[in-house]
Every structure is written in structure tokens, then in C-alpha cells.
Image 1: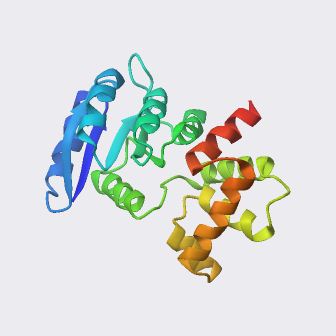
Image 2 (image 1 turned 120 degrees about the vertical axis):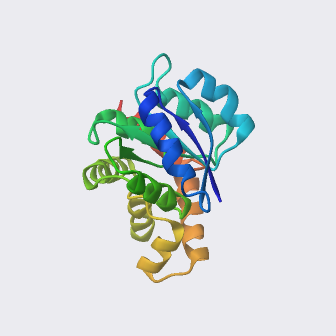
Length: 205
């Protein structure tokens, strides 16, 4: 069972998502829905859902800032951003803040549920254009101290691929991928993909 919290100021969309998720009660459980970031920040750390569906453009505190604060408290929380414009710069900013991926608000309930499933499998739903932005940022930032194989791993991570997907594509074991990632983090002085995104953004600002 995947527990989900929704943070969305549009009441129709918020209620529609709740209904759609709860119609699949064998797989999903919508445990809470919030109209703004301020309330969500108080309740989500207490509820500890598996996944949060987060609107980017919220009244008051933005969804991006809310993700940043939530991830500092719950580093393993999976957040999928809900956005109107899939190619907006705010999508990339959301990934830098710690989101796993995003989906547009005009997506069908089934597409949104597929995105949740993908995230729980270690993937990261995003469009090819945003993935290219991410890859470009990694390539511009990556230290020449990384080996070719380590750069391959980073590029795959930036495309949202899970450790298992990377292992399968490189024909290596899961432990080998973990070893490469440990070395990458050490060389780039970060502890997670989220920190790596944040460092990339800072270096490019």
C-alpha cells in the first residue's frame, strides 16, 4: 500500500485526485490533502506518507520551498510536483529542491498513478526536455576526476533511472552501482542526488 498526501490549492483538482486514488484502495491510500504549504509542513512530518503530490505554484509559500523544507526533515520522502507548464524553469528548480519528478495537471488520474508507481520503483517521471536540462547541468558541473563509468552512472541518475535500471543497462551488479555512487558522492562532496542537484544549481547561479 502506497500512502499519499496531496498539497494543491485548487479544490476541484485536490478532491478529484483524492477520489481517484481512493478508488484504487488496494494499491493507494490518500491519507491527507492540504490547500497550502504552511499546513502541509506541519502535518506531513507527523503523517509520514510514502509520496507527496505537490503543486508548484501555491499561495503563500511556494511548492518548491515546501519541498526544500520537507526534504530537510524527511530526506527519504518522495515528492512529485504538479505543474501546469511541463517545461517551466520552476520544474528544474523543484528537482534541485529535492523533488523526484513531476507531472502536468492535465494528466489523467491513471497517468498520475503511473508516476507514483514509477517513483516507488526508484524512477523519476520527467519529460525528455527536462531530462536533457538535467544531463546538461550534470555534464557542465561534473569534475574531471570522475571516471568515464562514473560519468555514465551520473548521467543515468540524472535521467531518473533507478539503481536496478543502471545495473541492468551497464551489465553490472546492484552493489557495483552502489560502489560507483559512493565514489561519486565522495569526489563531488555530496551525500545524495538531492544535494548534487542543489550544488549544481548553486554553481550555475
